[in-house]
Image (cartoon, rainbow, N blue to C red):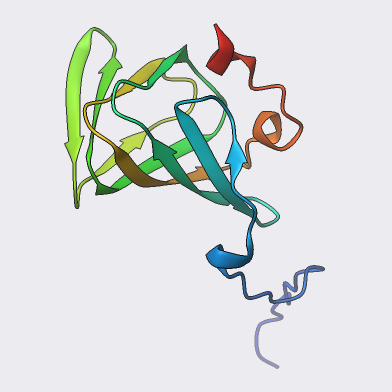
Length: 128
């Protein structure tokens, strides 16, 4: 007899999402987003107007920010990191960071685990 293998199956069905069918959520006058969530990760399209400031914050979720258009200037651990079109910034769990849009910016954020504060609208750091 060969080794016993445990089968892992998801309780969630496979699902196709279309960005153009997802409502745009206006978080502030300067920032809007669209969100798709799975069981343990989420992806968001984020639109930031030039000058938009996402205040210093941290979260349990590991974050990948992929800038598709524009540029974001991050403040992380006393360091300034500018992320431009085609670049991806990885932010580990609980690392404090803030971001400023240097120009009108369109980017994708991937989080794991999911940002429950985004889903239940308790992400009040946007309004500091």
